[in-house]
Amino acid sequence: MSETLPSVGEMLAATVPMVRTLNLEFREASPERAVLCLPDQSDFHNHVGGPHAGAMFTLAESASGAIVLAAFGDQLGRAVPLAVRAEIGYKKLAKGPVTATATLGRPAAEVVAELDAGERPEFPVNVAITREDGAVTGEMSIVWTLRPQS
Image (cartoon, rainbow, N blue to C red; front, side, top):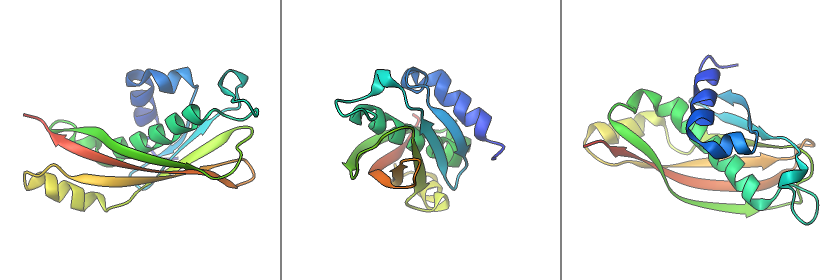
């Protein structure tokens, strides 16, 4: 487990009410990857008995936010992380608990170098959503930015 897990998980749970609403569980949060789980909860099922598409989107987006905080938390004094756009593909029927694993699509050092140069960097985060049997049920690509503070 990464030493950053409690602080990133606690930060997201404290600042993003949907994280608490869906009872998302933080398994790992480091600059290399973030892993969150959506427990199997009937209140968030769809018409076929699996997690609702909106709950899966929120799980994946939250995993992307966790890796952004883990990778760029030291930049929060001068930049605000914001999601710019996202695309999700639902690949297979999800049943039971699902896990989202997020990875950065660009090296963090490149992103920080652009911020240092006075730019507003954009960077992708890729997220795989899997069932307990390991099958990929969904994939999300979400583009984030670090908006410099005025």
